[in-house]
Length: 596
Image (tube, rainbow, N blue to C red; front, top):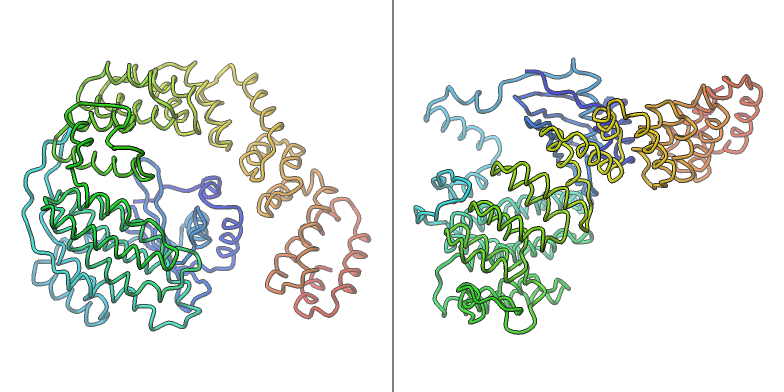
């Protein structure tokens, strides 16, 4: 089964300009060592700065979305250079892709004894697998049946005994996996370690969502004590190791509210959480367990909360006095539990009292109270995100006309309009409201300027495209951006080289500048010469040898532009000047001489 192709424009949208450029360099240098397709997943080995290659996994969903992960430590937003290199290799070198059976099909023909034997052999080869297996077995339990639009109250789950010792050993082994590394190498693996511990935390969340708060508390206690005892040995210079405590705090709060605890048990947990917070305060990790401690102390018993759950709603909401900073987050945890238990009227009372407008109106829709939801939404929705949530809920309930109207109303609210406008564009088009679809498409483009959204406007506009096109191009000309990738893609698509040049000046990234230079070499060679020199000269002047090849690449483009202008002698004179100026840079000189 062939994988869907990912055009370069989509790859650029998922990555920063720097990551795209470096990923393209990796691809061109042959850093992608292998590409293996299993069903809808593509896995690659990409050579990098470590001794072992990085593993990239790209999974293609039926709706066209792509989920991509890499074992490197990159965490700056968007795809890393290894993912970019993988996607470029899949696009330009499909012959590299080796298609194999998906794992589920590979294992489908094996019986229980064969699977057990296979697992034991794998553990013999990789001893650390036993900790992962032991932890997985500790959490294994039947899954709950599926639910309808409004879930029925959860049946009491089949109780199991979670082995806290297995959880502790697993967390400990994850953290101590760094012991075998040099400190300089271990720094780059902190993110992977924290993510592995977070996967253990996910098991607690699974128990919470099954309304098994007591077993979740067993897991959370084991994870918290082990991590708290070891985390200070992790390099926290980027704040990732300490940030995990916020994730723990949220899980503790919902687990405590999910468990049927006695007042004495609640006081004990509140004291434990306060003690743990005191330890973290010494390291400047503040307030991460405050919400959980409040959940333990109050449970569901505070008089004001009880009044709200009975439908007595006042301006104070669920709090006596000033609400704490985590009031919204704690309200959301309580709403999750009420929903799981089918206590829908209490859910609505609490959502209204705590200003959880999105939760309130979407639950009304799910309960079939459509007109109430629409009326309340028009009166109280405050953001585009809330409007989008209500519109989607209405559409899922079959109320597509009301959904479109609510989304149109949402465009008048505060907040980023891109996602709402995109949804409205597609929904309005599907329902035949072309005028509204066109308006939403233009809003989408202005909020999220890229070639795909531009072409979508053109498709919907039809015979009205010329005047719409003129307005969109003028909008881009008047909008200056530090990240003009979208403007450049559109201008180059339309052959508007001068507009593309204006968009990248004076401070666009070198990746976007290169894109315009490549298009301008034969059309605006004078500009291309200067742009290439502006990129190459700082690299050479700063003397950073690792970037000399990039400088030589820019100079090769400059040479092409000089020759297009018929100024070969001027190019040679410039090259001699560079050789004289940088004569002592022995790594650079051969690269310059190769350009003569």
